[in-house]
Image (cartoon, rainbow, N blue to C red; front, side, top):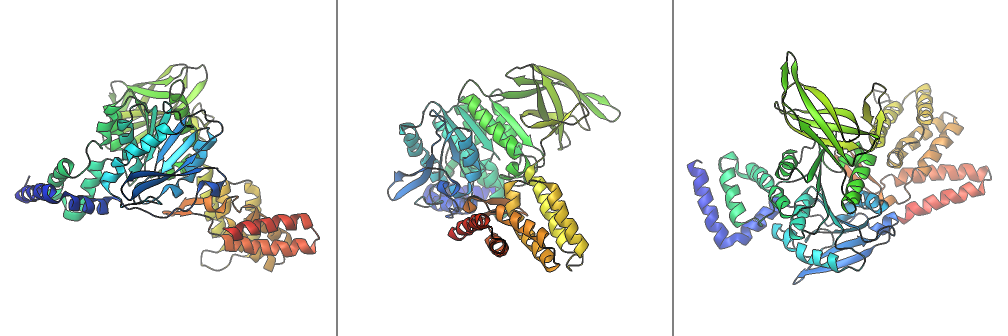
Length: 521
């Protein structure tokens, strides 16, 4: 440690003892980014809910939603949200957990969403006690069948909540965050490498709440943990999830998701698989036991080109059906390799060839896999990823490379390609509305009325049933709510003129209902 680091460290010790509140406020300002936006409530996407306020002290409370499921007999998943958002952003998670038959409870941290007070690192954890007390006392919640689901910042809170409530039966963590790493990154941006580690130590000892590092809190409870991590996540590195798994190897499962970044990108990459994996994990852990896939790595043998390593892949519970398992292999050169195998029965022995030695390995069983025709398997294609490619192709087809409108044959070919593509994911269809309308207008100007009408129909039919609950994660921007109402209303206006002239009162009534839905939101 250099002299500057020592001096700063000593100064911070004194400052922490005399004015810790100011340091905490400054730290919270750098690490926490509370949002007061609540873009959608459960009734905006068709779910009944109970609005809850839980007192957390003088002039402070946290606000949450309890979303009951008629299929639940008390099994409840508590959702802990990430930074820079509120619970109003998490309807994609609420909806699939509710469909899976769980009650869902989620709340805003102090200073976020509709919760009162100021956001702080202390409040994140101090408020857990009254929140957990409320959960245990609720008549519809079975306190012995609780699962916690933490996303990004929520991973720290969920793990600490499990530490405070060791009766929790299951914990799912997506994009696991290390407080020490987050503080270190903030300090590096603020004051550079020279004093980073000295200051982190001081903050750990005097300023940060105690017992919040996931590698520590995982030792305080006995429930199984599923750690989900996008392989391409640029916000949270997989090192924290791997460290948690190393701290409790018999209770943890790690799913490194290929071609996925930070949440909710995992939903885009493998929507149905995420739904099935998370719901299956909670259902098993809150019932007879969570399903588990493991890989045991043997001694590597060097070859002329790389290494050959024997691996035993184990899957529980055991069945005679073949199961698709993906191995995520961390290599000595820092790369992550993926290998896919079929497992029949309890285990399968395979030899894995890699360019560098394997330093860590984890396995995930896929519920939605397709035979690839060569004896292997591949994940079910992502409807969202496929839809994003379709959106790009349609936009490119409408406008030529030089920015001028495409030719008439090109426009007709684009319309034909849309027809040939068939059904698309509802969220993709909603994002295609402006392109449908632009293409329809061009074709109508060319006198191709029937093709234009079909495209206007697609645009109107693509309007989400719950417009406020539509969301889109693309081009680095996460959009919530349906942002193409003007284009959809233009399509509806064109169709109303067409069907009034054609004397189709039934279709006119349907289109007017869509217009009413759009104008309400």
